[in-house]
Length: 199
Image (cartoon, rainbow, N blue to C red):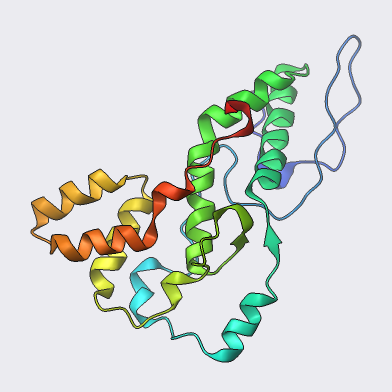
């Protein structure tokens, strides 16, 4: 029989009985979380390509923003790392301890943070540590250059950095001034938060 494949939806509420001489961690609580554990996140429901069709915020929209739940990327990351530790410890039939948490941080923290940042800009989830007064920024149209904005966001969503976007704009003949203003408004450099293991 082959090695079982562990999926997030297959996790039990508690771990299986421990074997002799083995110590296995309990399964972490099942909470809402960013869509990253060990695989890249799925595309968000609100497509970036449709950013130009998103409506201008009205007063009721602003009221709803003020009432939205505030979440912490660090608390969410801790839950994801603990879930990763549980899965890997089950595979190894022993508690991998802090080493598994550090492995998660090294492999997945940057992508996790980028995904949360895009969720924040799309207005899908409010992340306290990432807010610069731009929650739902991509939905505050109409935008002067919606197609160009959508392309820049897609590049950043794919893991590209500011320099990569600038080089793309040069090769594509895109208006550099507009691209630079978009990058300045998105301000991805201010969201490069270190993981607690890096402090």
